[in-house]
Image 1 (spheres, helix red, strand yellow):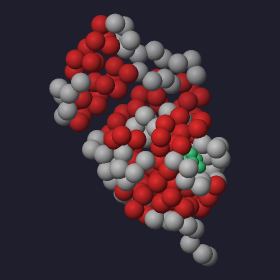
Image 2 (spheres, rainbow, N blue to C red; image 1 turned 180 degrees about the vertical axis):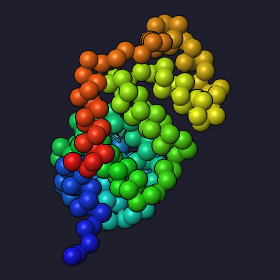
Image 3 (cartoon, rainbow, N blue to C red; image 1 turned 90 degrees about the vertical axis):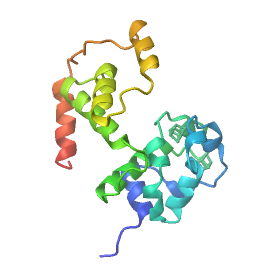
Length: 176
Ligand code: SF4
Ligand code: SF4
């Protein structure tokens, strides 16, 4: 059986048609994280089109915040956040470590909290990440200010739908 190309894998996982990209650069021009990226979303799309596996080692696929600004600007309606998700999935499946330190740990803690409570709980995410990463002191002031202003509740809420959320995780684990 012929080997599936990287672009085909990404298209299948993301539900997007990456060959539609004609590199107008609108996505990168509006991306709030582009300043920290090596290439930016339009060049990531180009690497996917060219089946360049080096894209799986790019820090950009892990820096993407999934804000969907790029998708809203794209004249070809490509949801680049989905493409970035697909690239992260392929990178994980191929055992390629994230190029951004501790980002996999951050994602792991995020998913564990959602799985346990059915919702996001920022204080647990912050605390868990700080403890497990050993990065105890960066952004401490910002975190404390958010808590004092009540923007980050201390006690987690349990979603009424958490059983359904767990089923989603179970289906994902079984590959269904
Ligand atoms: S906005 Fe759309 S078409 Fe333009 S470079 Fe980005 S992904 Fe490609
Ligand atoms: S979804 Fe990702 S790539 Fe697109 S604008 Fe937001 S941070 Fe940038």
